[in-house]
Image (cartoon, rainbow over all chains, first blue to last red; front, side, top):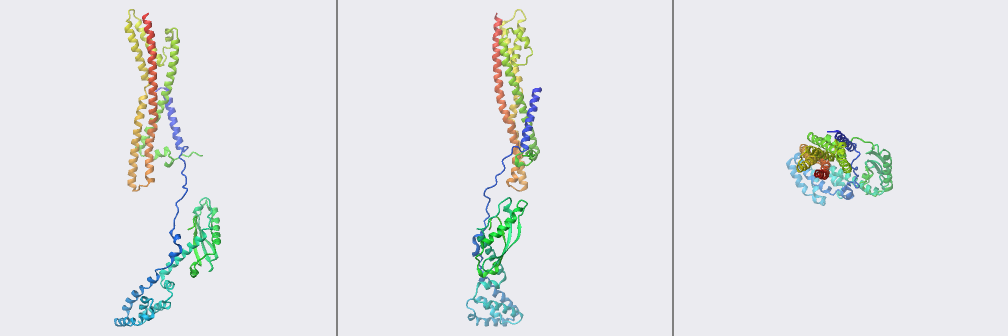
Length: 256
Length: 228
């Protein structure tokens, strides 16, 4: 290897180190990934169905059948057999005239009223409750049994919030900026019976980072103003107890 | 822009890809890198040598045909390392040895002159084409060595998939990328080597043809001398 070759070797090595260095120091790097222009949209099926689904259809059927099955074994257990048999026989007579529209539910109640003992008081109380408002149907039936009513109230409230959203959406403009889409403002609204606003309370804000710190006040303010501008709300007046205070309603970038 | 040593695989940094690789792949990569350096060293030195030789031959032949006295010219260029000069020296050397005794064989002298000068040409071409076989070897073998590294790396990343029970692209991709980097280096070494080999082979053929022409002309003039 003579001098010329050694020089060439040094030159080639230097060139390779230079190229490797350029690549490693990220002087030549692929172009950064472009952000996706249309981020995937969250679809919520509740907002599409809103008010209709909340109606508690199943309640009259659900509340009525359990009554006989619940009462009958207890009556047999406590009362002596002949008495139960007599009660059964007696019960058959006054039935039809008492309540033609709900025979299933009233039959055990009336029969149990003829039983004696501590159980009888309870049963008669239950019977009174059921027989006191026989004609009003759905609403009282829902109040009579605990769990369907609670579920119904929650469903109703959710549907009222959806109704609120559909009115507010038009006025809601989320602030834009760095990390603005992470901000969420939770608001509780209390309403007057005529659908106008009594109070607006900002409960909490989530998704606050150091980048959107300056936006959170604007976010809450715009949320409140959107509610104010959307008022008054048209909500069924008979459920005022439920929609008197709604929330916490979460305001995010896309209200739904 | 502040240059930061990129060690993440996504930026295609060679250092990062090298550091993440298996030991076998690392060895392959190092070998290929050395082969690449060697290739370029040969390319640089050989290109320089060929350029000097061509230019020197041009000047030498011009000087030779312009020279009045061949003996004087020989005295000046006795130790010239140029290919043309070597052929010339060989011819003169044989001429002097053949014409030194009184009853010389003219036909034999002609043949001897031709043979010595052809030998000198072959020796020169041999000397110049010394390293070209290395270029040929690197050009043909480097892609295979790189491919070996890639196959090894991909086998390794497949076993990694099997052990992790996870076939998402983020698990598979880095291993395959680092494995493919071995083939990339192989091609990086092989492509210049093949191009240079072909180009230098062509250059060497041209030089040989040129030396042959010079030798023939010189032989013709010596042969004319013999007749007189």
